Image (cartoon, rainbow, N blue to C red; front, top):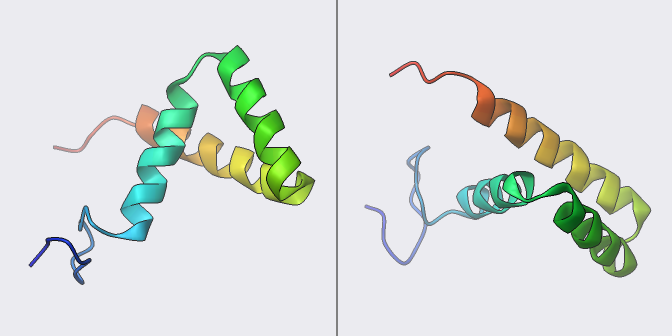
Length: 71
C-alpha cells in the first residue's frame, strides 16, 4: 500500500522514480530562459556530464508528455 514509504506498484507516487519524473516535467514546462539559468546553476554544482544527462532526461520526459494518452 502506498504511503510514507514507497511500495512495489509501478505507479507508486511515493517512489524516487516518481519524484524524478515530476522534477523533469517541471523543468520541461518552464520558459527557455528559466531552464537556461537552471541548467547553468546545475552545471556549477554537478558538472557538464551530469547537466548533459539532465537535459537528455528532460527532453525524454517532454516527448513522453506530448504523446496522446491511451485512456
